[in-house]
Image 1: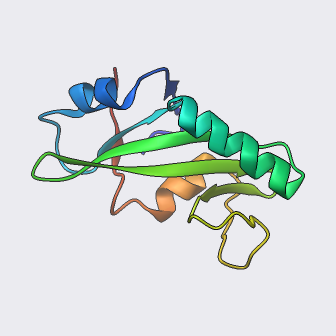
Image 2: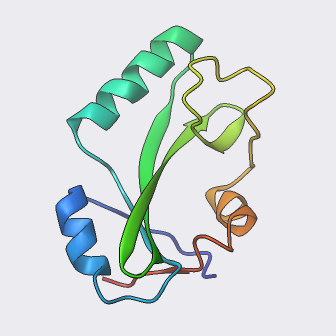
Length: 114
């Protein structure tokens, strides 16, 4: 996997169009829609931290698309698991986005060059 990552300004529909007919494991990172920004703001307020987020959109099989909500905190990068307490032991943090992506390489194998 390349160390150069790009977060795109795509909607889910645009992401799906770009990923159509791509092999399983092909992914892109995107900013997400208004709801994603709202969730990030709510998590930041609830955890009293400055947060950033993005969406991992990935081909998972037979042209099915799946998404993961990725959050960056002062502790590092994590995949959000619907637990508003980001200090819970359920959250595992990676120092970099690349480390997080390597940890799920069986799901997200290759970033799509667009």
